[in-house]
Image (cartoon, rainbow, N blue to C red):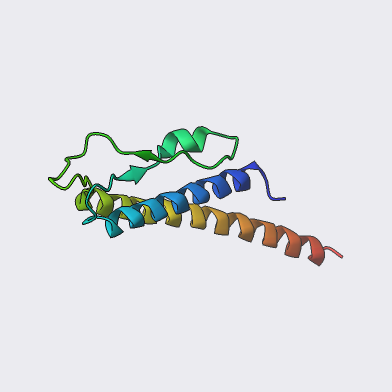
Amino acid sequence: MLDPLSHSLDRYMTLVSVRQKLVASNVANADTPGYKTQDIDFETELRNAAGTSPMVNTVPGLRVKNDGNNVDLDREARLLAENALRFSVASNLLRTQLKTVRMAIEGGGAAS
């Protein structure tokens, strides 16, 4: 209803949500032997206009501990902060867009 930006924001916020769940799972499994860190390629998934479920991958290049676990809590904390910022920006854009629509509706009714 609003415009193509709304669809893009919806996709963006869905990806932020998926990443948030993955990061939370990574943190929760930080001490689970053999657990491999999972993530999505955010930029690639954002460009994927098909809207399919994001592809979750294990993260290469992380230091593997003796128990086979490779969760890096510093990396996960950075991703949590990045996700919070992304969500804030997207929700502010959506809020602004909704205000614009509301003003147009209210302004349209005042002309009668």
